Image 1 (cartoon, rainbow, N blue to C red):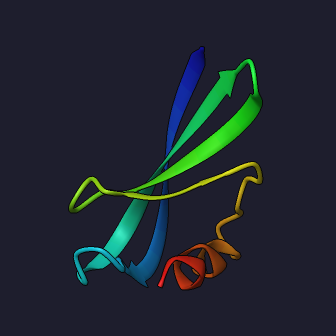
Image 2 (cartoon, rainbow, N blue to C red):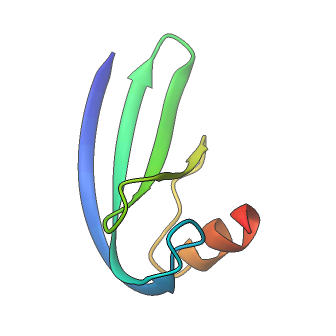
Image 3 (cartoon, rainbow, N blue to C red):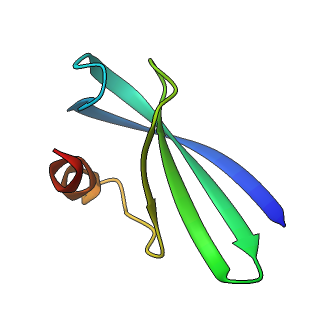
Length: 68
């Protein structure tokens, strides 16, 4: 399995820790089942979502509303 980690800037509230966060970590994981993206809160280090799709900076709010 191959992993790449990226950090993006945004302004949202984490649904796990309820803190305002300005960054989120995106880990790209390539495995035998295909590419998956893991979204991680930079404040509490909780996994927010694993998805087949790569959310852009503008559509990241849909990531958080799915999890609430």
